[in-house]
Length: 246
Image 1 (spheres, rainbow, N blue to C red):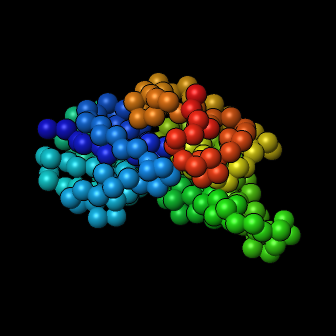
Image 2 (cartoon, one colour):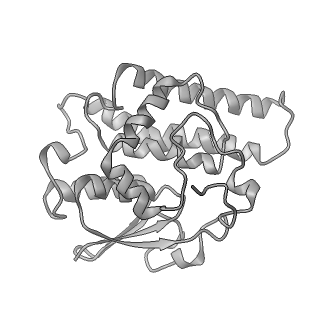
């Protein structure tokens, strides 16, 4: 029996597909289409009361689980025992206490959803309302967003990957916020963040990333360059538009 991944298009659930592709784990993929911006009712299934994605079902253990960070940790823990049939050793994608890069690994793994994603979404929501450019709330949000991006960029100036020389799940966690999230906002340019752009170029070269995105969102134009889309999905009215398509 294999994992079932419930994937909503253009969402954080791309992290789970990518992780499984990196680890060589077999999985069943069930796709859900946004309606037209928010999650569809098809995600309101047993064990997923919030109706959000990603959501997994593990028939071997009888466990269902939501929240991308929790799912990534669960899959990594199961893979470490060999129970999911994935690769071990250099393909484990996690750092243990005492290993070089461990502190960087746990910091950036959690920073993805604790620091970077909230900064992106805070600016996203403020972009949806009409505020003057000198409004204090907008000014603070912009300052927070660029301080957050600079923090990531500074780290990538000193290391190829967030945990150091080794690609890890911390990188998988961060990439969504820097890329696909921009289809919802903020429409931020990465000019001036050369290390982030270099990092996203390195991500593009990973075969597992290419496979994951082709399986999960084959129509989506990947946002791996400096510039965001001209319009967000919210501005364009949802997935019925072509602003996100290749």
